Amino acid sequence: MNYLGSKIRLSSFIYNVISNSVDQKLSDCSFFDLFAGTGAVGNCFYNKVKSIGYNDREYYSYVLNSAFYSEVGGRQYQLVLDELNQLEGVEGFIFQEYSESGTAGRLYFSANNGKKIDAMRLNIEQLFQCSEINEDLYILLIATLLVAADKIANTASVYCAYLKKLKKTATFTIELNPIKRAVRLIEYKVHKDDSNMLIKNIKGDILYLDPPYNAREYGSYYHLLNTISIYDTKFKPKGKTGIRSYETSRFCLKKEADKALLEILNTADFKHIFLSYNNEGFISSSRIKEMMTGLGYYQCSSIKYPRFKSHTDDRKSYTEESLHHLMKY
Image (cartoon, rainbow, N blue to C red; front, side, top):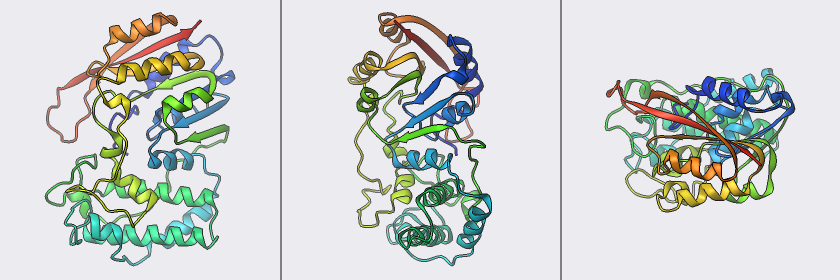
């Protein structure tokens, strides 16, 4: 998925810094990603560590990260996907509220794809409620639908707005294909909690932090993924973009971000803490260094990379990502 702040492009950098910084074998370490998003960093480490944990308060993140560890057999998975792909579309909630020709007039999807998403999501729910599929397959199918829907969404990568006209990829018919999953299972846990609360109840060897850097709120930017995941069709979408209610993260508030980070650093019962943060965030690198130096040994590695953008202009625009490392006393 094309995800705001995704660390896929930086995964090699992050892996190399962490693996060269910890004072024991990764295979003997537990790893916890406290702001997991789509799971890019955790999925890079899962087969290198002894156990792993993910957390993100957004439900779509919980679905995607849980699905990565699904134990559903490939044959059963493909059979259900084939059946879902053959469904006739229906004029349901997604069609009416978020699609071309829908009553709400929001152009997130073509009319055909809006109907197909409704038919697929309704069928997945029916299969689960009738106990024809278990929870493992249920979560895997929803995750697969999210990935497929994102590919044909009529957006510039995020869902805080839609394009005025259908772009070419949005005219393609949605198709469910198997998504990438773990090739071997290890001890894992997926949470969907507030990070500043959860940190009080977890401990381990390596903690990775990738909180929001600025006012971009993921509950707003990816609200439609939550709506498809939850499919709570009785809620009333708000405003032009059909947003759902969400609580703003403290990390998205300039007056709160510093305090929120310091709380996590002070509370965390982890030997190694790694924080990804760029030079455009609310908290300066010098302030992060000050926080971490007061708690243990500190070092920092940085890399420049192309800034996230929704459109293809501004090709020469770069930002600097820093990976701050605290080894607690």
